Image 1: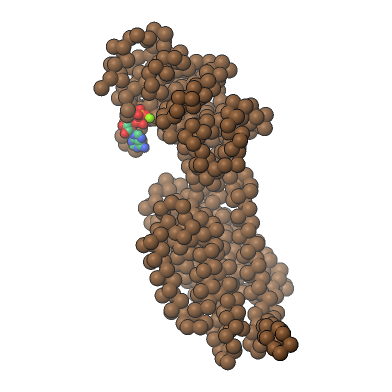
Image 2: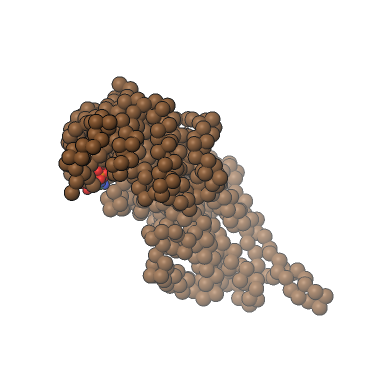
Length: 322
Length: 231
Ligand SMILES: Nc1ncnc2c1ncn2[C@@H]1O[C@H](COP(=O)(O)OP(=O)(O)O)[C@@H](O)[C@H]1O
Ligand SMILES: [Mg+2]
């Protein structure tokens, strides 16, 4: 997920190290926020259903495309379209995913190998249908608000610390909103899993689905719900990013790859691990890209994945071998 | 109460049970005996709805439960204490019980009655199930099944690997459930323990139910026991 803002940051020559780092961190935090939402969706689906959803990036893309459709259909003030998109796009994508679960995944009995093949097929179908209907153009969604916020930095002067506003150190209110919204949604997912009856049912199914059935849990419905929830989280991540990065039918590739990286590093099925790994990958990607190069960021992330796979295959936070 | 009428089933294409018939009456401890691999666990899985029936029928209180999906079998009042306990290890004791209670919508009163049977669990409500001792895990697996308010209780090797004091505690609860009119199907390898509590015994061999005996008549009949259990 490359953000246009990063290129702008690179142009701010002559900025001091501290403010520059803060700028890079903010850009990275936006990437991390969206990545965390997307990866948590992938992680939930794998953790509970043991399904490796290769089509996860396409649910992300579909969220962005539907966000564009909904926003342009509503018209009026940008905020109305955006709010409608933020509600409708994840719901629609979630419903579509739940439908795919009962019509396709259930048919192959959630067999690990066949679900990979089936979700590859799903990836292709979604991509082609979007290409045929939405077309090959990249289209933006207008952010609901986008005030440029100058950010202060602290400097030690002769009379102690003093605030000043370095030229070029700024972000937008929308980017801060993306970070905040992702944090709120992730907290809600955590509360859902830890402190509600639905979460109890999901976790019991994850740990031993057969026993869950014995105790009255309709595991097939749990699976449909989980697959829908995972896809809806990806779609929500896409709705958040689409005012910064445009909607395009090929935009699902990066989020899929990065989500896999995050889920491997964080530990398959571990929510806190997934979030921490998303922060690690997102922030380091932002910072390393700004100070060195995006290529180096990718190389380091790949190296990290390799190290984790060799020395801690269950992931940094995973409890059992994956 | 629970009636198996000529059920056949297996895993994938491999048949395990061949036309097994048996009946477990209300207030009876019916023991299933047989060598390793005879099909005892498979019989319990079939009753619980975890394996599709290839042939035959299963009736609970006269109602057909054979074709029901597993999650609906539990709701008809079948409590299952599986081999190896199979608790949800990362859930707490309280959460394991809560899922049990949800099966048939039982309330706090049921939970309290069950916990009265296992006071040790009451002290460990917030502890993760996987951190309990083997005996405590068996108590929790039993308590979880009792939260269903079962009409039928399926117990698969409940004393496997337990200390004698734990075995006695589990047996007391089983006997008490029989007194409350629950139909109990028990798999137990220790023959002395079986003969001490069972009312009837059915021998299973190569997936077939061979003979059913009244436990009282079986005492001292070593030749019968050796035929099905001897090596
Ligand atoms: N999950 C399974 N998949 C395939 N075969 C199985 C499975 N579980 C048990 N079996 C086979 O079914 C037969 C009966 O097993 P089981 O019912 O567990 O025996 P018991 O409980 O009497 O020791 C054995 O031959 C065993 O190998
Ligand atoms: Mg067995």
